[in-house]
Length: 305
Picture 1 (cartoon, helix red, strand yellow):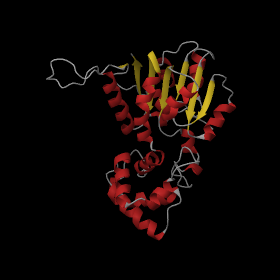
Picture 2 (cartoon, one colour):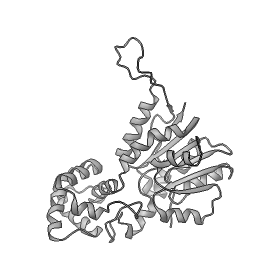
Picture 3 (cartoon, one colour):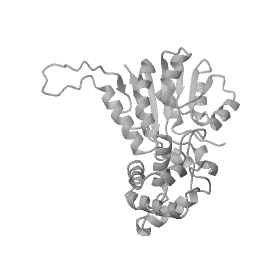
Picture 4 (tube, one colour):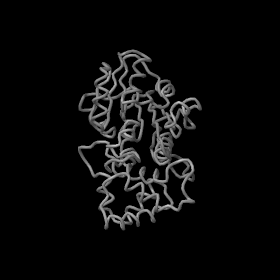
């Protein structure tokens, strides 16, 4: 399994690491970021690495990183799980959102356009597959998912074709869906820089894994885990995730949400964070050249007050 961690130096620097600190790697993947964090300080760090994909967790465990304790769970369960482990607060949190390059590179997972089953689950032990969604969801729900999660302007047309196609043959493979999307979008409207099925695949993956709901649920709880002065760094790969993080950080930084006409504050809201990265940190031209998959990455960093 080959994986190139995105924005590695920027993540390491942004977390203000300290010896003996406790950290959460919310989507540990193959452990590239976690290993870099340990190398920056030493293995007096304790890193809890969460991931829903058992296969990548086994790969991390095979590296024998003494400072890393893997946890087969979603990062939105980190608060409850760490409390059970009697970890009250941590010194930093990293979230590297979305699917990893490893998952895209394995056709049997169904994330790529290569021939494979339409699965797309991070955790293959539970939940609906992409095929089950395509074969059972109503047309209006398919259209909504593809439009909202994929930001695909031909969502209604694609959804209609899906419903028509499954009456003839149920969906089971990625290539079935690729061909359908290609036929549903007029050739002149195909995007120049990405495959025409990219947005539909993204939308399905997000729905299968409930990625946006997970992120919204996790953010308030993760802030409660941070010690004062500790930082949270979040890498997103598309505008939907980045928008959620950006809005949450802005709201958490506010010390008052009363209407402007109120002479004094009545809301009793307290500032929870200080935003460190006023604008998202993006990969350098060199990193994008060496790792094209990093091109859409955005890193936002905030500090607990």
